[in-house]
Image 1 (cartoon, rainbow, N blue to C red):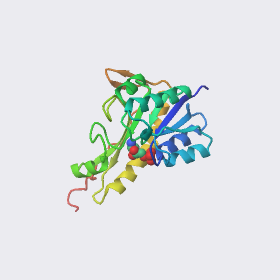
Image 2: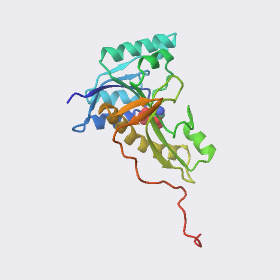
Image 3: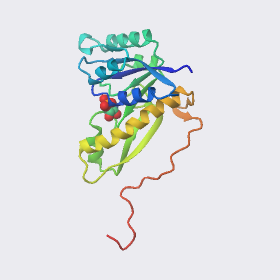
Image 4: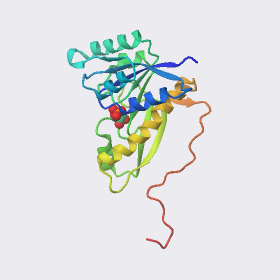
Length: 222
Ligand code: GRF
């Protein structure tokens, strides 16, 4: 089986990277990580990627005066490693339109909301402030505007009355760790095509659960 070659871009903790590594280590998974790239030398994800024998590289953005030069360095490293799909996993740098265009439909991102709601930073703060009862996460092909592009996989997650940013982030993160490997699998299996800026997935049954939050209580009960 030829496996789709992934390049994973991180800036920090790397828990989504870890979820992808675990999936790639599962027998029959149709992708492998050939490079982990970080823009910060202290990104925690670098350590455990190296521990399991994955090539890692730091391209420190502070050493580049211009965003385009930094992106060109990223591009060179990814192409030199033979990367076929770039996965942003908590990568905290904005990418130039040129970089995004040159990886069109070969560049995916994960965001901790149900896009197109709550794009950008401080997602969970915005989610809580809006008072929505259901949030979630989204894996999508990236387009030049931050957190936009054809949606591949989403999961819905309830917001609880007692949530703060940390508790909500943790619940959404658990869903992220399921969605990212699923999205990569669908792409690697050749089941995704983009039509009119919507991602069409062949043979993917929708989940059959309707998530209602709060749960309806029987009439008469309190
Ligand atoms: C995740 O919540 C992801 O959705 C967002 O940044 C966070 C990265 O977490 N883009 P980790 O580094 O993968 O643990």
